[in-house]
Image 1 (tube, rainbow, N blue to C red):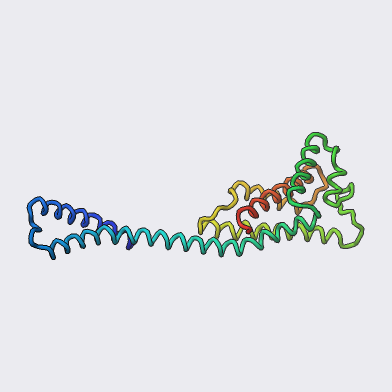
Image 2: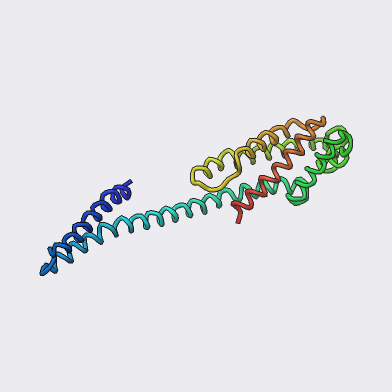
Length: 222
């Protein structure tokens, strides 16, 4: 605001003084008045130069502040995105791109034939034919649900808390529609996958999680 007022005041005054100076030259006001000539010239230069310098310095300061905020933001968001990636990669023992392609392929096959690729889905998710985790052990279902809850919680940390900060400092983030879709699918993953609709929801959830994690890594992980 102060810079704006300096510009609003100094530029019109500078123009006025310059016009007076030019008119004075035509009327020979400045002959034998070297000091006054230098004074008027200096004032004219000051009135034009001061707001220009202030604008440049202000923009430079804003750019530096923005760069610092972005560095601080990436220092926070980077580990959270890597944690989300670790949950996915550790759970499925494959890369994000491969997992995304697997989820898309199985989902499309199930869209064409409900029974076509349940075996591939069960293998991917670690389920048996009844929609339960196939590894034998009394606590396996509890661990599997805990993994899903951790996934939901981690996504809420990223999209709930960090999205607001990203918008506030003006850094690029995920499209709002992506966030809505991921939130919807991730929460539906908690309901299990004993039916075709549930299976599809889990596969779509995995697909979207891979997509957003890859995009956030591209944007904010050095």
